Length: 76
View 1 (cartoon, rainbow, N blue to C red):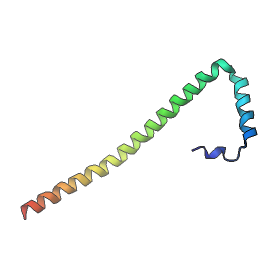
View 2 (cartoon, rainbow, N blue to C red):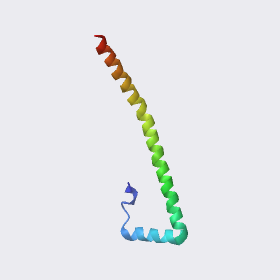
View 3 (tube, one colour):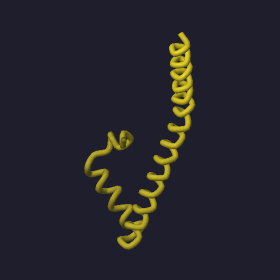
View 4 (tube, rainbow, N blue to C red):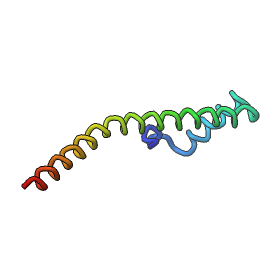
């Protein structure tokens, strides 16, 4: 998930967190994190919607094929 952070050690992460705290301040940091969280949720929802849209035609085609097979077996 956070593979790009794989090369960073604990000291570097603490330094980054300290710089972010200095830049945005203690009052703005929760608002910033909330906004990032909403953005990530929206992005994941969009990815899932696209995935569902791509998979839906495949599932629909399989259902049609199954119904056709059932019709053929009942005719025989």
